[in-house]
Length: 257
Image: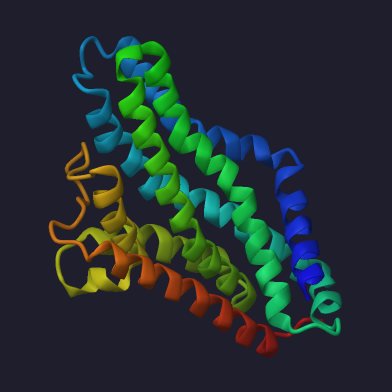
């Protein structure tokens, strides 16, 4: 059982990280670093406090854009290609529980995403540490918390994408809707609807872990009264488990031949 999970995790990692597509993923992960470098070099005094810049610009960029983008385009294509090539029938007809196969695909997606998310979160802090050495300790501490935040958030995001990839023949539409529109937009609007968005709980953690109080654009701000950290983590963990469970149910109903 463990071998099945490890084998599929390794397959997922290889299919995503050993082809030319990884260059595009790395380029997306480096966008926050590029923004940071340009702001430092050409901002003409624009940056008054490096930590505030990271909190108001870089962390929101990663949570609103980098995280969902990398999750979608790492998680969906591998599963979709298995269905398109008919290889999913081979996997799901092995003498192992289907949930182990799904856990393997999920684990591979997460492991593939972590290095890219580390680039997105740590590299901007490192640029500040190199170009503005006086801020090194503060910005690197924030970078570490930023990395931890993204590592927690990738779990339910990847599980959601795996579920959509198994349940639907058009998973990209569903994933984009739930992670971008329903996530970033509905999850940032006042009212009861935000409690049904993963983004609301991720930004709740961002507020306590990274000190996020506002975003630079003023659009889609974090909640003034987010749930407690323990509740946020419980919700994100519960969604992760629930999506894997729903994915294995969906795998039994979708035609695999």
